[in-house]
Image (tube, rainbow, N blue to C red; front, side, top):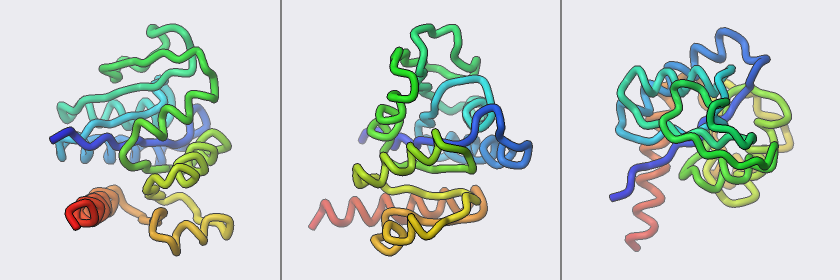
Length: 169
């Protein structure tokens, strides 16, 4: 069976130390499950922290870079994918992920959340404030708000099992 690919999205240069610590812990937990961590690939903020957490727990990491150069990837990225697409690479981030986890970020993260929802991907918000614009998706069950990295893992297991059960019917 193919390994689950968990897309971890969130703030870059402006990410707070607290958000980066959550991203690091989440990356480690994803790796411990044997899942693949996918992110934007750069060596800053949530991208760097989540990839470092995964690598330090023997995980596999994929970075979808907006640039044309692999040397701009975080040293914690195993598989750098260069796109030369700038922000357009966000659609690759989302479509290549089986599930998307969003930590606090700015417009890039919000665009990834929106692209995921538009494409019917499950989205988990990790300590990311839920606004009224997303309530519709929460009611539909494709966006879930949690507050701790451990809750992300439990929710992924729950959602992924539900998705597999539906395919079996």
